[in-house]
Length: 155
Image 1: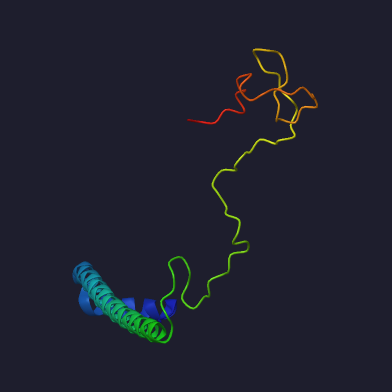
Image 2: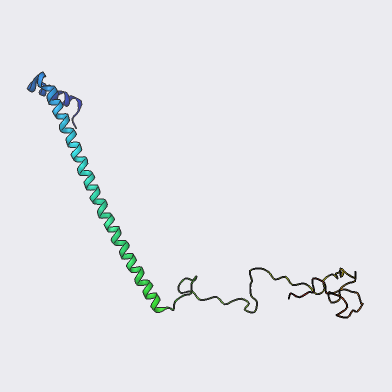
């Protein structure tokens, strides 16, 4: 780069050679030339960067295809050596044994009445109903009274 004293010397030489009338035209044409040079260099740079991005993209696509092919080959090889896994378990895992095969988990708990619960009175006679844990020692025959709501069986 030229220093300030060097630029002053160059300006004086140009002024003497071309004269004061041609100097504005010369400066204008030099400015247009610089603008065109910058535009051309910017276009060249952008075209070069575009080509580099395209090459990188093609390299990435080729690498991804290669990885996908390797993955498919690995899955095929694993599939040949191991039996098919059940749904919901990854390949190569063993099925877990059920902890208590005799008991089954249900969605809702089953509520069963306790036979030794508090005795209830029959609504019609005011006596306790036999068979539901009452301490009453009265004996009734099965046909004597109607069973309570808790003892009725669905039809």
